[in-house]
Image (cartoon, rainbow, N blue to C red; front, side, top):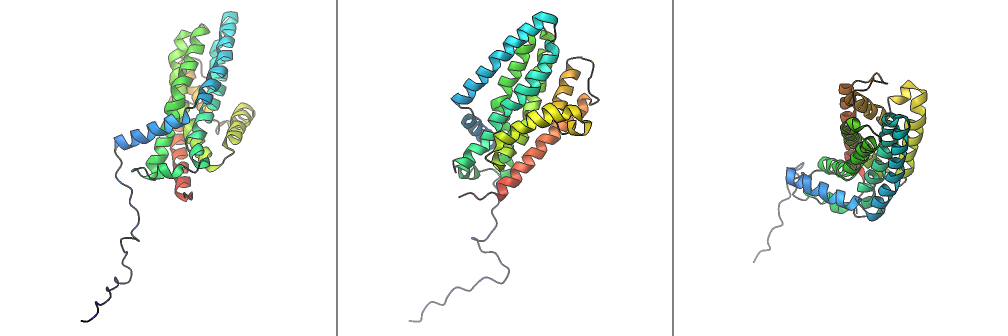
Length: 258
């Protein structure tokens, strides 16, 4: 009995099943929602909740004191709530969404989710926004209310939510890129946004707080302190978010996952 002939190799240039490129499964809203929910739950820890509460109390007390003194809480909301608490609060959550997974070598479980990488990056940004946005928006609104300016509560809350989205896009990417993301994020918030942007109009264009403040001023019916209109601020914040998601996608693709 003759031996079975060996299989004929495929023609040159033909991809075998093992060598076929991986195609991302189709994205569905349910898959995106599940991934977002899982990432948001992982980012919310007891320590971060305690830190948020501990940091909120002094701001509320200061708002009451300033509001009762001479009504300066309007500016306090923009400087302290939207300019300081918002970026730092978002930083602590957003850098952890993918950063914790990368540090724990568990990023592979996200990569195994049945959604494409760009949607994984989108889910991470949405998770940070969902986890950080509502409490920071509520804090901004409550500061306005207890300070004697309830009419600014809605403008403060809406501006905080959109600001959280933009900061999340940037800080999620930063958390994935480096394990010193908190340090670099604080340098950006305190040095670039808090100091350099006040000295140079060029540097102010790189400050997310500028566009958040423009929304707050426009929606609150205040005289604009900046030449950025509400529409321009909205477009810029959306563009910043998209750029952050693009960076996260790029670094997820290039990252070696065991």
